[in-house]
Amino acid sequence: MKDKIKFEVCLDSVESAIEAQAGGADRVELCDNLFEGGTTPSAGAIRLAREKLTIGLQVIIRPRGGDFCYSDIEMEVMTQDVITARDLGADGVVIGILTPDGQVDIDRCKVLMKAAGDMNVTFHRAFDMTRDPFEALEDIISLGCSRILTSGQEATVPEGMDLLKKLVQKAENRIIIMPGNGITERNLNKVMKGIGAAEYHVYLHEPKPSRMMFKPDHIYMGGLLRQPEFSNLYTDSSRMKQIKSLGNTF
Image (cartoon, rainbow, N blue to C red; front, side):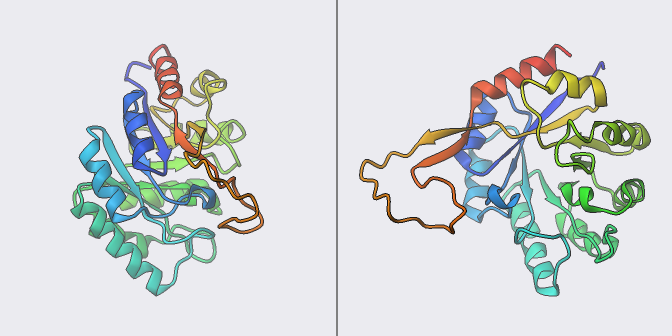
C-alpha cells in the first residue's frame, strides 16, 4: 500500500486527545461515556480540544447508549449537537441512525448531514447493526459520508476481517472503510494485511491511579456494575507511537 496509513484514536477526554496527538495520531474521535459505547461530549470538551489540537477532531453525535433508532426529540438534540460541534471548530462529526427494521435511516441522516455543512461525516458502528451490510454501504455512500467505522458486523475487527476485506473491495475509492474495535499492537499487522484498509480506528487506554489520598471504600457513584472510583483511563502516547510505527512499516 503506497499511501500512508492513518490512525484515528477513540477517547473520552481532552487529556487523552493531547496524549494521542503526542503519540502521532492523525485524528481523534472525541466521545463521552465510552462504557456505553460513546455519547456526545460536552461543548466545553469540544472547545478545549479544538484549542489544544492541531490534528483532526471528530465529535461523536449520540444522545444516549443503546440502539440507534431515535425519537423526534432525540433527533432535535442531535441536530443541535451537530451545529454546536461545527460552530466550535470540529473537523467532522460521527453519526449513525437506523430504521426499526435495521436499515440506514436515509431521511434522518440527511438532516444531520445538512446541519454538518462543510464538516466531514463518519457513519459509526450503527453500520454493524444493519441487516444487509452491502445495502447499507450503498446507502451511506449515497448520503455523501466520508467513511464508515465498522468491526465487520462482529464484536471485534479480528473476527470481522472477512467482511471488512469485502467491504474495502466493494467500496473501491467511493468511501473509506475504517476498521475499528479490538485492534491492538499485537494484531495490527495481521489486521492490516488481512483487510487492506487505508485508515484504522484504535482505543489505546491505560489506567492511571486517582490523585485522591482519602479513599472511602464504602461509597460509589455508579451502579453495581461499576468501574473503580479511584482509577481513570487515559490514552497512552507510547502505545500510539508503537501503533504508528507499525503502520509506517506496513
